[in-house]
Image (cartoon, rainbow, N blue to C red):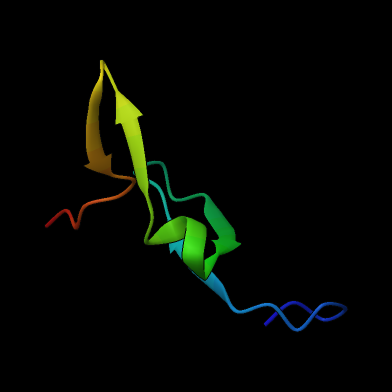
Length: 45
């Protein structure tokens, strides 16, 4: 949760081990790539 706005955040780690935080709605949202709508993130094993 953001300390000032109380917005719900998602924390995640990229392939290089860097930690990031992004608003929940944005994290689970979609993006348009090459004219196609896709999930912003997908789970990687």
